[in-house]
Image (cartoon, rainbow, N blue to C red; front, side, top):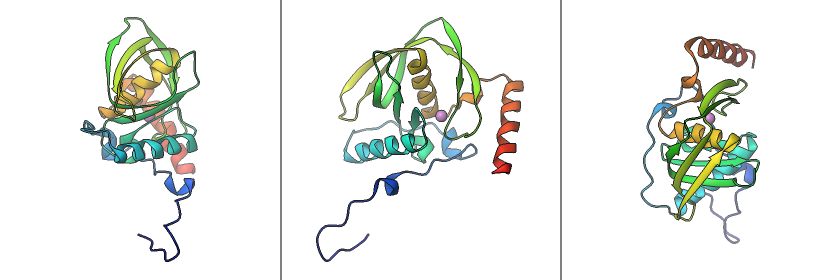
Length: 183
Ligand code: NI
């Protein structure tokens, strides 16, 4: 901790609050994240920093395991379609999903530079706590539904590539490894 003799410590700059995103291969991405017992200031601090990290990475969603925190916390900001916008989900659960599915392109800040086409339910209902610890219910469809499912998967140690066919997954991982080598 920094000691200051002339007043309180300076506030950290936003850049200093950006968290490191772990990449494919990090064991934390495969662990089942722990339920949050109490939405306290520590959780809110995590949420704030996750938003900052997500925006810095130009993502639409980020789950706590991606910043090496194995807790059931995720943030989402999908351009609004009448509902949505930026919000945090703490201890989220998908409580209903449509039988209808759709294919759509997904990427992940933990697997940068590649994208894959994933089939998911078109509509879902999610129940979660917000950053104040208040329960809320979200009915989502389209891109928002896709994003919340992707993030909730992360909390169970599931990555979008797990939903691909073995061939599609192998091709994606080949592309990813080639890019990683080129970087
Ligand atoms: Ni992801």
